[in-house]
Image (tube, rainbow, N blue to C red; front, side, top):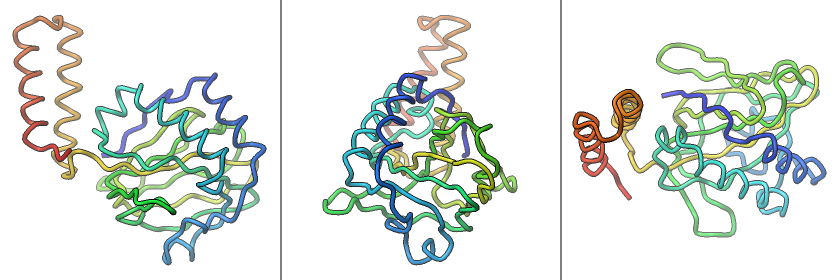
Amino acid sequence: MLIAIPDVLDDARLGEVRALIDGADWVDGNVTSGAQSALAKRNRQLPEESDAATRAGAIILDALAATPLFVAAALPLKVFPPLFNRYEGGEAFGAHVDNAVRIKRGSDFRIRSDLSATLFLEDAHAYDGGELVIDDQFGEQRVKLPAGHLVLYPASSLHHVEPVTRGCRTASFFWVQSMIRDAAARRTLFELDQGVQAAAAAMGQGDPAVIRLTGVYHNLLRRWADC
């Protein structure tokens, strides 16, 4: 399931994040690459242990927890601390698949990467190119969202970032281990949740049908969740 999630960061939070990262020291993006990715990756990145990355990442994690659509779609068990990258001057990231397990360096924190996420931090009109291109069951999906918007997609997807030919593409990226390992079950729960929310808006939270549907959702979540 590929889903765009708008307004994860409002203007104030976006400004806080950019103020922290814009003046920081950026390094070669291959500091976090696996062997396959290193062959295809040309960009810059904030060191994950840097103060700027840690503080900006904390803002993003708080925003994610307050974004109902993200929570409903991902059903997160763990979120890898957000990382930050930049592309300009023709930089790109060739086709690759993200590592199945991500380990935070210098710690015992690790996750199974069920979902990948890119949070766009640059106005889409400020740069040319830089589309995130994801191959899924419906073909090639090209994603370039406004600043503050996020795309969530299966970490198992083959994907790449097109060369940036004008301006600078700045983004945050991270991975999610979901409580629901099975992608089909996760999609079913998301669609059921959205249906329950629509029914509640139309009929009220106290409507017997809404109550029964809510019970079905939680019983399926109880059956499938690994937490």
